[in-house]
Image 1: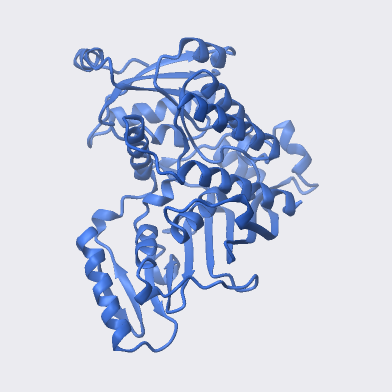
Image 2: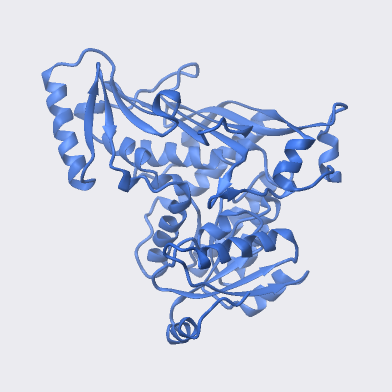
Length: 443
């Protein structure tokens, strides 16, 4: 696919020192979302190494859609290297500065390790490990990356979601929030629940899923997949700029359970009329697939009780989509992101006082609002019968797909010399070790 103009190629040649992207085996649509916007300081030439097949075709179609859209089209020049030896060729040729990895999760840990061994920086989609064996490879990859001074990070888009950012910011005002409550196993102080759907729209078109997305051996069980984001947010919001050690995380309970998928539903999102052999053991006599798509675990982190849970349904009701519910309970108020029918299925952050608060608390809230507005102009509060809705201008509501560009821009800043926060890598490892604790306990 050569969609470049002569001007684009000339600009690429002139930018010999620009960052160059390599995309490795892009089996998930997140790989394309890294390129949804043209990135400053990044060469338009992108090399893709992948096996031939429908997953590569869908990836290229998404990139072409970005290049040909009417509004602010991108100008990516795609160079495809396909064949069974794609990994060996990429490691030998290394035509770029960093590798984007988003695809079959069973291969991801090995891909990451091979890339850093070859001296390549890596930006990987979550999860970077789906079982203890993958975790060992990931730990080795981080050891090698540190030795070679390489940048290895996962794509944590939810840190850029505006209600989550403001939930974190308001919790930094002790006169308003108090201290983070410790909670109990039955009533955790921090809860995060995500509801996702197999059938959805991406870039305005129906998403086609690869059939392995339904296989826990290849995609990973829910308890080690989307929970990566939620466990990351617990650390990032509750203990900002602090390093979490393994000893500070203790698993209390963990479980996973199935979502039923009919053959008709499976065909709708995969375009396959028959079950692949690797899914047949999970198909019952009723010809319905039972895939372990849901997971939840409760744990303590520095003595604070937290619970994360992920639910997968086949399709959202009309007018709705994926949802997120997030609670941080302080000794003076709770900060609660709700995304239900009352909110028209759009995330809204509420400040909910624990009891009738006096003038001093309201004055402190007013001061906090002013300081928040200095950083986020236009953000204000609306009182709603004892609780406060955080009103956020639409300009901040970029949406999930746009967050991939924000994550990539942050990553590029690190590549160009901006210091990586001291907590980033140790907390990434702590996060994945937390998931491995949950994976073991769920069994």
